[in-house]
Length: 96
View 1 (cartoon, rainbow, N blue to C red):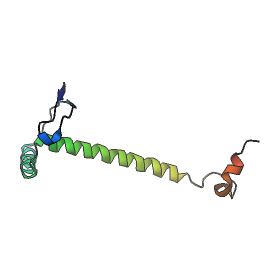
View 2 (cartoon, helix red, strand yellow):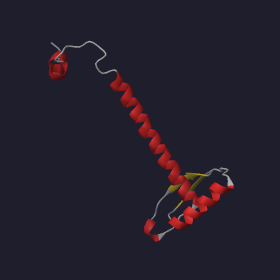
View 3 (cartoon, rainbow, N blue to C red):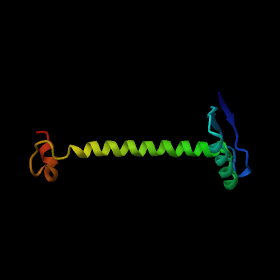
View 4 (cartoon, one colour):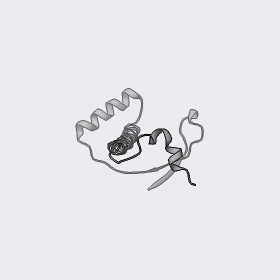
């Protein structure tokens, strides 16, 4: 289900949010810990979960980038090339 709503606090201004509702099952202990944390941080449990998911997704993107970078670096020097290729690459790529 998609919902459109406006920010509920005056300092939010008018913010258009699109969200999708979902249900999750948590062990009672996790739910209680989330409720305590939400109270301490003056946030809702829903906000904490959304922030945690956003953080996790960001970490996944960083890890994916690091993995791609490591794959690229793993082939450095594995293929034959002119010894001065790094310095003279423009000359080698010139089209005559």
